[in-house]
Length: 452
Image (tube, rainbow, N blue to C red; front, side):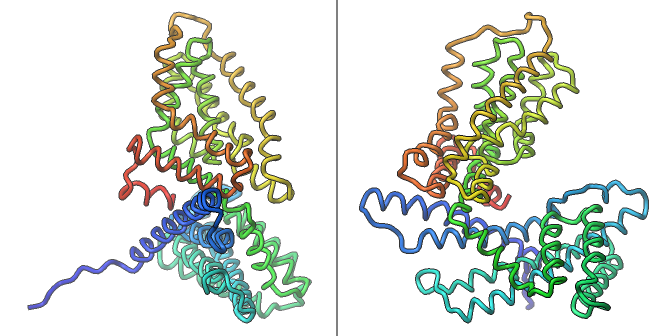
């Protein structure tokens, strides 16, 4: 008797491993700083090497996230011209952009291997006997996966993929055995990179490829590129970015959008242009945590668009208001651009958060004012203000409304670092949406949201 055993395809198994790895890494990044803060404030002790562990988990999360984005064919590009080309030019452009991008990833992976081998000789220990080079292996492994997936998505046919693979091999051959001095090949290589960028190469390929070409042309070892990559990603403040964003995604994937819109409509709906004011406030609130206007539009657009249309806004005005309002929260704490600017400028994150408040409020006021100007002048459909409805809406959304206080109290109160405040925010958002409101299921929804 022969037993037939169903086996999971290798690609599906790898996908599951990647998703579970991201879930584990993000959970550890959130729980370790919270535990550290509680132990330090309660018992005066801490977790040995907790900051270094979280910083290096950020490296794993970033490279795994890049591999997942490549798997889902969602790597961000600076240009969409390649997708607009007519006829046969479109698949040709995709093959060229993908092969150039894959070649850049191969070189970045090789540089990562050289960097890891050097670090292995140094013998540095992260914590609890874990060598640092084990974590740094995420860089060459991540770039290798991204290269393979770029080739996979280069064409819908195996013939196109084979052509892309041959182009990658050709690019590698030219890089290793250039037909002329490398210094004279810089301009043609940069021209090829520019062409690949125009027809759709990912953003990281543009910047990483430019750095690599310039290093190669100057005769410098490309292994110095992952050194800078590593040093920037393990910055002590960098883990706050994925943690604050994670809190925003918990909000976006739950029923928080409905509760917050109800609050802002109850407070502003009786004014002229009340739906536009509520749109500006709700979008600013959401984007300050997600850090992405696209996520805000997806989470709120389906709810706000009918409200604006029922208030007799034109479809053009409603779409314009939603699209513009999606970016309003980018200057409010704890949005990730502010954290990035603080890291690059080497100034305290608290100062950057305070500096973004005034221009952020100005943008919200101007957007709301524009929405009021576009609203119909008739008062017939304007609801009367109700203290009862406002109170009920605020009470139902009290957990979400308290989220900024949770995020900023520890940071400005001085008893939590930016990373600890971000971790507390993510844990708070999870508890609020999964255990209080029960909009997210721990087994079904949370493992889906975290890789997203």
